[in-house]
Structure formats: C-alpha cells, structure tokens
Picture 1: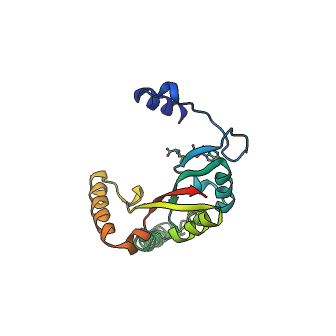
Picture 2: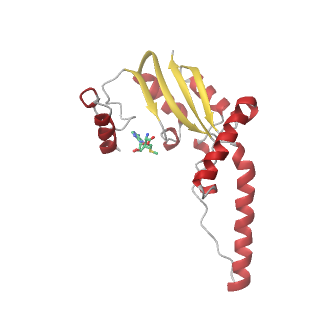
Picture 3: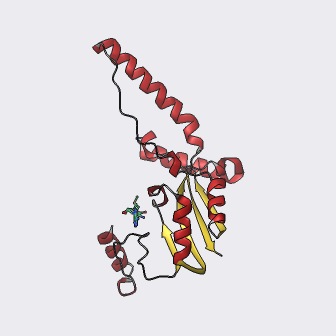
Length: 184
Ligand SMILES: C[S@@+](CC[C@H](N)C(=O)[O-])C[C@H]1O[C@@H](n2cnc3c(N)ncnc32)[C@H](O)[C@@H]1O
C-alpha cells in the first residue's frame, strides 16, 4: 500500500508534500489534530464503531472532516443473493450426499455483520460521537462474487445508479456508502 501510494504521489508530482507511514490509527500517538481524514475499507476492521468514531473525532480539529466508507448491514442485494446462495449450497449438499453417501459441510464464514451499519444506524453513532453528517452517497454495485463477466457488472451498476437517483428507498439500501462527517 505504501509503495503504491509513493508511486501515485510521484506520478501526480506531489512527492515533496506527501508523507506515508504505517501507523496504528488508534494508538493515540499520531501528531494531529488533522483537518481531514479518509478511511476506505477501514471501519469494518473495528468491533466498536462508537469507540472508533469518538477516537477519530478526537484526532480532528473542530470543523475537520472525516470521510468514511461503510458497508450497509441491510443492502438490497442480500434479499436476492443470500437465499439464492443458500439454495445452491443446499442443492450441492444434497447432490454430494446422493453421490458420495455423506453431505459436505463448509465451515460458516466469520460473522462480521455487526460491523456493517444501515445509513440510519451509522448516522446515529456519528451524531452521538460529536459529528455532523455533511454528505452521504451510496454505491449500489453488485459485489464482485456474483458476476464473473466484468462488462456485465459494469452495465448493471449503471442501471442501478440511474434507478437509485429516482428511488430514495433503494439508495438507503446501497451495498456500501461514503459519509462525510464534520467534527462539531
Ligand atoms: C481493505 S484495506 C483498505 C486500504 C485502502 N484504504 C484502500 O482503500 O485501498 C484496509 C486497511 O486498513 C488498515 N487498518 C486496519 N486496522 C488499522 C488500524 N488500527 N490502524 C491503521 N490502519 C488499519 C489495514 O492495514 C489495511 O491496509
């Protein structure tokens, strides 16, 4: 990540104004306070989002902005694909039981659903932690694993984005979303 970031900065001609370090965001030893911070693919690493948000708040100047990516606990795509996946898994189990005499079992995936938040849940946590919601934008994309053909996925993404503009209820059920939070 750091090597790639250095390459990106060099390509953008920003080498002299950027510094990249590997640090624990929560260790409390970062020099701060900061005017802004960005966490993409970050919030889901923490069990306690409230404690995380309070810590991030303490790292910002008043009026500072945190941009965070959040996985929705209740995305629309789950309604469609979870039953489909369960059905297929059951079918596979039945087929292998019929051919090999015993059902195959796969270990359950680690449950991290408590690290996903509906927009409403996350906004409440942010509000409790001293943040003002400034902006929120959802992405309705299909998770990669459902589509083998990238071109088809991209086309569906586009359709969904158009639909989402007209339907607020669908936007609330984005697969993931970005929030911009301002520290009060
Ligand atoms: C899914 S990657 C996302 C990386 C990058 N933000 C991006 O969008 O490509 C998650 C990153 O969060 C980092 N991370 C997890 N816990 C962290 C912590 N306590 N402090 C700092 N970084 C952390 C991991 O090391 C990893 O690089």
